Image (tube, rainbow, N blue to C red; front, side, top):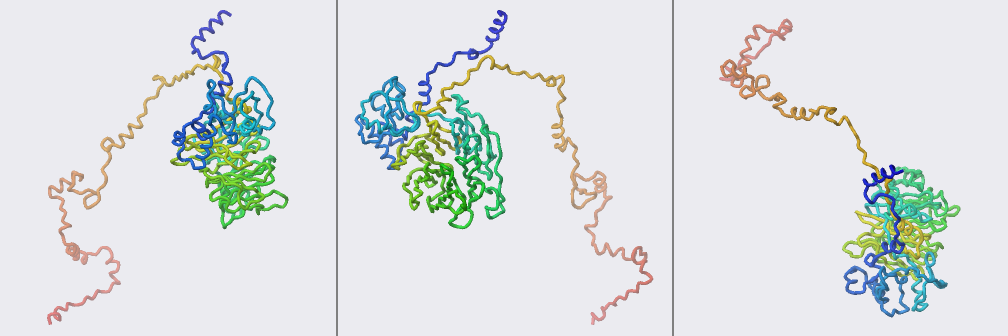
Length: 622
């Protein structure tokens, strides 16, 4: 045993002190959550500065309505607040010692539970799990009811990173344990809260279709598989671990009537799994059709193919809605004998493409989001005009959506970053009953917010953001209101390395790399270089065109030596250029007449004698 201990101590001396089994970190949960607490700078749009000048300088591009909203926040921070003013959320505890009144009002979020206990107020309307009881307070009951009305978990924040471009798709399974994020960088990342530590790294990365952006993700009702919609014409289905189960068929692009083909023929725009049926999926495409894997042809204002930009199921899966490229919203009720003609047709609902649709749980209200920078609330019983229109919501992405709070007291949407604007991406919360803006929460100072979701079981808010160079998913939570999810992975420290994890670097011995076994250096490049050199390769001279002997002109330096000497000695005389061609031919006329060799002997016997006209010189003289 002593020998083993000595050997172990000798090996242990070779490792740094960081190795080996160490005591677990005794960091308290309070300190862990303080590290993820949102700063006032990160939520500049949700909290107002104490100085009016600083606020106006930081947000110069806010509209008049937004400035008025900020003024109302400033007025609510007076030492003696007016009971009629609406304060969003209870004051958030500061990280340090007990603050003064001004600092306490700036904070947003509930305080940590005190050591004492008490009874909950039955009149409080809560979102998510019940809040721990609080001690006696000097405020009136009316103020407490007003403060506790909206329980938005905003005090803490983590970011799930990994994408290199904006995150355009988001899906959280029904249990809240796994999160999917899709991006314009063509990849899908899978995060598991139960298996993830404080490093917040994804456990799998997929590329569904090479070169196509991820546009939508949707979990099945049983959360055992998910749908991935990309810019291609074929959607794919994966299991819970990211293994491919199959892909949809592609239609025939040469068939004009889309009812006669089995799949989409252009890029997909959106897709959602049926909320209750595992075998049914709804997709929309740029080819101008929706499919429940039975094609639905929308009613078009003008002939031709107009893309369907988004689609949605209602809560029970009995209605589907599609946002059409001509600005209309069309709704079908799935009943026996239903056809492609829509039951509800809202013409010119928006002046630009529709990016998101969302039904309320009772199926009476529909929310629509568009490129025109607006969010509209529709009562499906009276569709002639929207109930409310919220403007000043810039939108630059076709995947910007809308989400409800778990109890549907609020709905929320994200905004995009505009050029020459100092306001970053925001999450805007609206009251469903009063139809008014409740709160604006700053997510990123330079990145747009695209997808958002409020998970009912976790009571945590998810918001995807990014730009051309980065992308991430922001998770907003509150330690006193939220459950599991981000709270689990943030409190789990990364695993410490031990001696068992140490691996010595492998040394690869390659005897053939020694000079003894090394091959002779190749002379291929040297030979190629010599062949390119005309002197070293003895390259023959190219033939010269023109008059001369043997293709050479005797007067040039390239002529043959014998030709040059004979010409200089006068033995070769080139007289053909000085001689008359007629005289050169006629000097052979007598020889040809006396001794014909070729044609004349063959026709000598049958050829008549030529008769030439006599000279008329005498007549010409006359």
